[in-house]
Length: 396
Image (cartoon, rainbow, N blue to C red; front, side, top):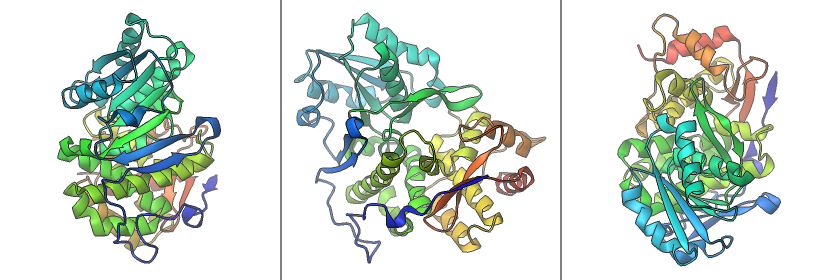
């Protein structure tokens, strides 16, 4: 059964940074604080975007009042930004606690999650305590899940320090940990109070992590805004060079598209599934290789190529569009070919892992496919055809 998602191009908010007639213009400098609203009635919140926000006390002035705050970060990010965030929060909270978790996707599990609960309980934190997720997607997902669970729900704030987290995982309220059999299989929908995208934190991001984040930026073009895809083609070199103005535009436009989708489908009953373009194949790579071997964005990059190729073989897009996407993925420094997960039956291993995907229904794998540029659909595909795609798109 196919669930077709109508192209949001006509319904999406207009791109305020690039003119309608040209995909190469950017109107707002990075120094201007830009705000994107997530409209979810009483669960609405702003995404703020600018350099320098993290260490500015006024950034957090509108948050709920509380005695205590807990910063959740990891051992890589803590030496870079924990002191600055703690100092900014000290004006609003009498107690600012810190827990630094081990870094890496391989630690996104029950054992590490319990370290957050240990800190909350050891410090006697009450249900007004505000949690601050300082880090990338792993930290954001685990902090959000902890906030959703502790005392049945406490407020939390996303302070993403990676491009991937700023454009995707910190926005929309998906929180989770991994299970050995599947990525993000245990979690909750729980919205933050605020998302703080400090562009200055991207200066310390390793090159590999920057490329991984670009995968989540690239996906928005094929599924929702082909003009944005053109802008990315024009400005990929600027993004790789960490040009602040280009990054500000990429983060804002990505958040605008995700906000529009989440505002209509908070709990992924339909439309929101299009945001998983490339993720069905990508999650299989991550699980099959062992969490942490491939970065999430690297799996998404190769997964987008595989999903585009499946779209082509289903006559949904032409050869030229697939080639165009592959060039963009490659320019971002992302892998074009999927990993070999099983030397004897690679396609079979992919299919086994993808049947655990959250979009699967009654064991039937459902893929996010491109139904023409800037338009997505969610549908099943014959296993035999999927096998052909996997064989054609994997290394070896």
